[in-house]
Image (cartoon, rainbow, N blue to C red):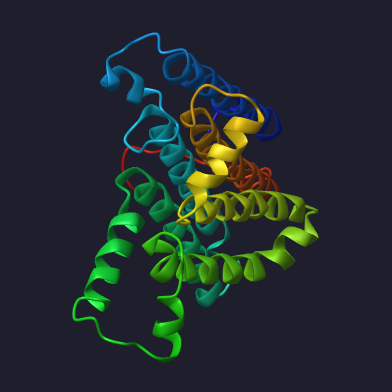
Length: 262
């Protein structure tokens, strides 16, 4: 390979570009959400929903989904780079982590956890059966159905991923990205849990009257925007952390593209 054919990629520079781009994109989405949904520039709901951060199947949801899937692909790249130097078990775990983040992206766009949670709750309570034990305890959940059946699995996977990654990230001084990223996700899910409570409307009305706002929608929508933006920010921080990890383990690696096997 000739020297002039070598292309050097400055990973640190690209990581900064990605981080700044993601933050600016999130600020832009907040601005558009405010213009289209608070100011009511367009009366047509279909136009407003395109920019509505609080609704699924919107541009903000697409952005969040793409971020999560880019994070998953980054983890796959880490697995590929390390494949020669780690055990089969560790390689499998890295691949599973990548699949988890890919699933988060797909789930975010398709609302799978909300639909599946509701379906499972209807199946369990179909015959008015009185459940004891763990299922009975879970069914006492006062919020959305997905918090009953799906959230515990997500939480378990998140804890296992954090435990597995802690040592690797600690050695490279990258644990802050895990703490901040997963921390944003946890706070966001806490807000989502409160949004499903039966008396949450009373709280929204109280905030509306206290702040002398015109509509309760301004309060409920703002809480949803904060939740979704925290999820996006958490994904951004995790992605940046994994990109830094990739930059460290792939430092100096050369990739040769050929038309066919030599």
